[in-house]
Figure (cartoon, rainbow, N blue to C red):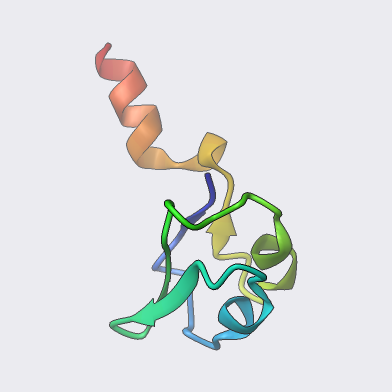
Length: 69
């Protein structure tokens, strides 16, 4: 699942407009991906000018969880 690096996101809404299923919205000035709606098409990652939408494999929260296991 894609996730948003909020440190990089500038809230430009390009991903919101590109998402074919309406899974992305802006909350507190940053992109938010509704994981229930997301179809993992990758359009948001390709359109993001800040490279703020990242794949799950780069999610630091998941990496930290795996280290604890």
